[in-house]
Image 1 (tube, rainbow over the protein chains, first blue to last red):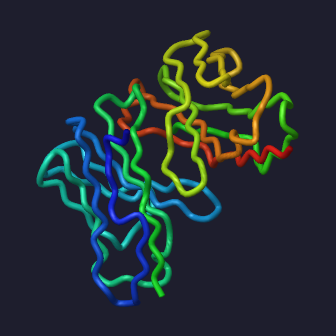
Image 2 (spheres, rainbow over the protein chains, first blue to last red; image 1 turned 60 degrees about the horizontal axis):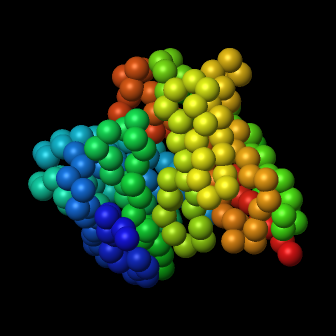
Length: 112
Length: 114
C-alpha cells in the first residue's frame, strides 16, 4: 500500500498549457523530492524541500516550480508546457535520509 | 563529492542464472547504501539497504554486502526469475558528508528470459 501518492499517473497535454503534478504523503516526512527520469533511466533531481516553506532547486535546471505550504503536500507546476518537458516525474519523501526514500508511482507527462 | 558507479546494462540472463550487478561508490563520510528496483511503469521501491561496513542487506532472494575496503555494494541473486526483470539502482546517503539527499547510480536494466 502506497503512502505517497502522485496524480495523475498519465497526462497528455498541449504546448503552452499550465499543469500541476500532485504529490502527497501520509507519513509525516519533512523531506520531499522531485526527480525527472528520462527514457534512458537516469534520475535527475529537480527540486527538494526540507520542510514547510522551504524549497530548493536540484542538480538539473528545470523550468518547473514547487511549493510546500503543508507538510504532506509538494506539488510541481509548469506554467507553460513544452515538448521538451515530456518525461516521467517521480516524487519521493523521507523522515531520515539514511533510511532511504519512499517513492510515488510517478506521473508520465507527454506534451504534444 | 559523492558518486555511485554501476555496471552498464542491459544485462540479459536466462531464468535460474546467477546475477551480479556491480556498484562502487565514493563518499566523504560514512554512507548508508541502498538498492532500489523499478518495475516497468512504476516508481522506485527499496529492495535492501546496509548502514555500516560488513552489513549484509537481503530481501526477496537478493543480497548485497557493504565492503568499505573496496567501496562496493554489489547486488547478487542466486537464481533469477522472469519476474525480476526491472531496472536496479544503487544509491548512497552520506549524512556525514553534510547531505540530506541520496546519490543514485545511473541504473542497470535486467532482462530475464525463459
